[in-house]
Image 1: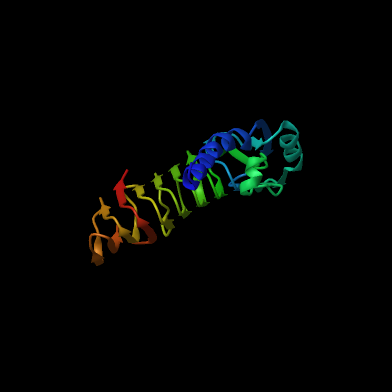
Image 2: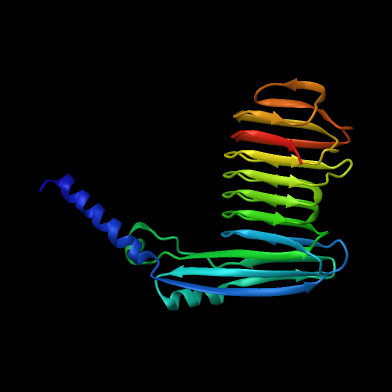
Length: 265
């Protein structure tokens, strides 16, 4: 047998062995807290790996539930990792801040993988907030969804899409690898909305009475607008700028690889 055949055989053996040893044990558990809150509260959540789901409800209370999944080579290692997770919480009647401080993970070298030394933590959040809540949601790897909430917002992830179905508000929405889908039932007078992705499309649905200077651009894709555009600075296949409605607010939409659709609700 020649060297290339031996090497190929070695790779095939690794392909079978490594996946079986890397994560031999999975630990799943939950963390839950609730907070009494006053009028027009602010909720801040910072995450690393895992989705974030936020829903509005008719209570003066913020409820947070975290689903924790730890993968390791053994139960002992998984439990050791879990004991090192510390949820940082800062809460009063006006603001709730939540973040999980995570231990450093062994991502695994090549030979470490053979020994089953890779570890991972995934925390997915399910949150309920009063219908009128300002919110700031950040993640690195994970999808973010919000529905039935109104307020000023910042929603940011790196690897994951963003889905917002909001009663109203304005703010910033951004991701790098993922699409953005936003339904905004009310856009405030003089409000500012910034929507940005790199690899993904943008679907933005706005109320019929929206008033704003609109600036939308893509590098690879096209821009489609369902509103009448006035005071046009430019209107081309990949970019447009002008005024919709009374022009009191400002809406900025950007993507690099993907189309932009701006429609009426």
